[in-house]
Length: 309
Image (cartoon, rainbow, N blue to C red; front, side, top):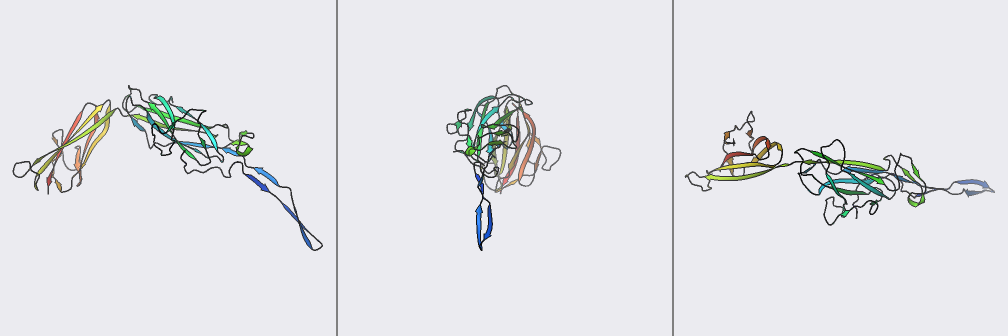
């Protein structure tokens, strides 16, 4: 089943009959007589309206050569009658850095908002156009492949258009007898179609952070007893292509240990504990080191010490 979401459909349901009968009353011979008018029946026409939004909280982070990158969208029938919708993806938008390759459009069959390969249904226009009741929402995934030649930071726009299959046009456009219950279908303020866009961002560089520790006890050995000094070493290695900007390391001081003042080093150079001109600081609970912009193929090594209490 398609998942339903909260929205605000356009009032009275399409196909509803609004019936009105007037009454005339008069008195004769001390008796009140009521006479009913003929009934006037107005059938509510179907209003065609839809919205579409990107459900991704920001750019979808990806990498060179990535396959089946998922961009997520949400479409909602904001009209007042059940309507099927045609979905058209677009991955060749202007103004971005590159065009990904379209793989498929997939309908979130189980309504969990997460792409589930083999569970969710591949969409084929004109074959399984989703039919949504008023206020019903549907999550749709657009899957793309990323070329293997992109630079770090390149962005590609992924968009879709959803349109009522009954018809679209300027607000007020009428499709005679095409609405729910045999009434007319009337295009609403959205034009009965909606566009939504998101972006995928190539982050071609990635970082691996490896932490190790050595122990020096008060007796010159390596036992972990109160008073022993632990030296932590953190090595951040950037791989892939491009540069990671504003890379930093944060390391909280473990329980039952006390930070050794002025023990932070970066690439062998001593750092102060205060927030000042160098790249590290200790705020009372954690060590923070700003590594700056680090290109792929480079590493940064940080050390600091704590004393077991």
